[in-house]
Length: 239
Image (cartoon, rainbow, N blue to C red; front, side, top):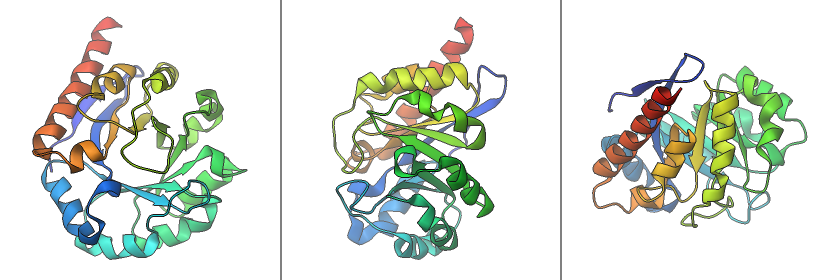
């Protein structure tokens, strides 16, 4: 695995540039090999989309698939993007299956704080995400409780959608007010849109179709990593 690039953020703490392929659009009949192909290309983690047909209008896979993947990818960080209603109900199952981080949606639960607490008690890192129509300020009370914040740049549910550039102010808001937090961006992200994400302040980059379908995923990952690194270095010089 490639070494992480350490970037100094506004608060003086460190933040890692991390590239996480979303395997939603990969050949799901050959999932373990596809995941390994992405890791061999220099990915830092895997972004695994779980959809229940209720919170989003699509179905993917659940914890039994994660349990099968874990032995084949024993050292890989699994970021579970839980696009499910009542995310509290799957915490224990995902932890037992081998999930590393449990990222749920603010809109999917009536009690985000309890959900975060249960994730942490299960021994996983906690992430919280919002859909495009949700104001970013709703996350303010939870920033200090989570390890990562996810900003969706498409409507969750299907891969291959067009990137929503008007979501960038949400990322900029989080970076300005909560400088040390990991900010993940997901939806339509690739070489053509990475500059916008980097300039806004995202440091965890989820890329699906652009990586899975790339003729040279290693070079694509390298390029996106470099763009994010350079953007945050510029932001430090401007302060």
